Length: 188
Ligand SMILES: Cc1cc2nc3c(=O)[nH]c(=O)nc-3n(C[C@H](O)[C@H](O)[C@H](O)COP(=O)(O)O)c2cc1C
Image 1 (spheres, rainbow, N blue to C red):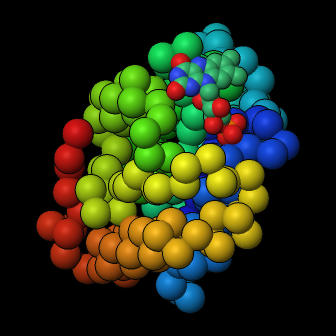
Image 2: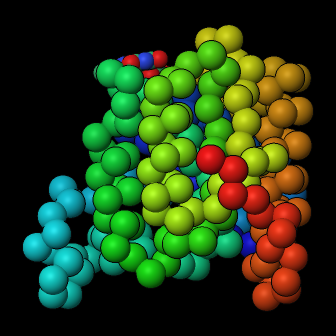
């Protein structure tokens, strides 16, 4: 089951990217993670959607289309989303691949509440299906510069393990074309 991980941070030592890598490490075996680098995208411009889509936004949409779900972790910049991450979302607004896509949202406990509220509203507007049980605050207390550091923290590891299991349980029937979409909840 393919999952597309998107970090909202371009930073090399990003704690959000580390969270996603740690989530991939503890996810059930059937989960196959792919990481998307939002830094590859051009600035969104609706004019560019009029003809053939530029190659990188087209590639992003195709990856979203192939993924059974998205796992997202983003920092907060000035009480909002980082511009590069919002840019990636803007490229997906007009796509047919994004609506109804199950999403797991990971964030660092005690940080970025404004960005998270904003992101939830954006995802609701874009008709994503946020999976409540898979969307968690990970207790890191500043020890999160690498996936190894995240996983060395027993509480963080347990929280991520449960969240990823919940995500796979929620989207598994759906990705196999079965009807149990009830497990995927709209919770914004
Ligand atoms: C330009 C800038 C603005 C920031 N603004 C906020 C903010 O408004 N609220 C907040 O909680 N943290 C803010 N931060 C801190 C980052 O969200 C925090 O360091 C986060 O862990 C960075 O994520 P990363 O490690 O994945 O790059 C800001 C950081 C930067 C560089």
